[in-house]
Image (cartoon, rainbow, N blue to C red; front, side, top):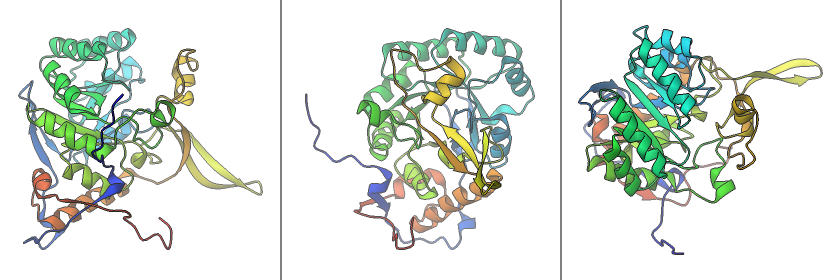
Length: 347
């Protein structure tokens, strides 16, 4: 047993210090980034935000909606083969990842889809990216898909970030336990404060010309801004995108004196008992649920939320004098705080 005494930080522990700037308007900043991926040489340009590969938010309608904003979606892995073929053959998927896990059935379906349609971006997703099996899977995916962009995770430390980049990952997904419907930290005691994880993993990845995606922990646009400031190349969102028209969650209504009331959407973690009952017939005897199920207020089209997100990021950039999004880490100074918000009228 050993203890690390150096403080580790979450988004709630810091604010970004403003800097003198020549920028006069949010309209003057550039929130798109251009990337050349290390293992393929392929290029991509857009707003580097990704909807999580959760079955409520990682949807084809979400992919089409976010493409209008230059953002990405990691499609959930439970779509039927024919529907995936139709989507990837349509010419629309420049902004979509095909997602799969370690199960042989996932790989068989992936190979079947790939035989019928081009797949240029792959998300290899497991809860625990620290196993040798997962590193081998990343290497196998790279061998079989030399021209595809591969995102793999999740991890939270520099050593495993390096291992995944060396195995073939272009992007390493960072985050264990910070998600809004994830209970891994509660159930296992395992995790790492998300901002520190992003900072340390970004430093490790960038040294090998790899990239990182901050996955989880963002609750407001300011958290997304902090993730970019900490070195994240991409930011993945789940709960912040739940409850929209483009989601595929179950709709529920409050009942008030027998009358239909407010509209909500069911949202749950992909390791929750809800998800495991839906796709696996229940929670296996050797594991426990590591996710929760909640109801999220209906929020209409995702375009409105995207305007809030991009507007918040643009405003952050004007506060620190960053003309382009890629400049944000170099112009970011974090200030540790005991509190961020005045909550006299609530959050």
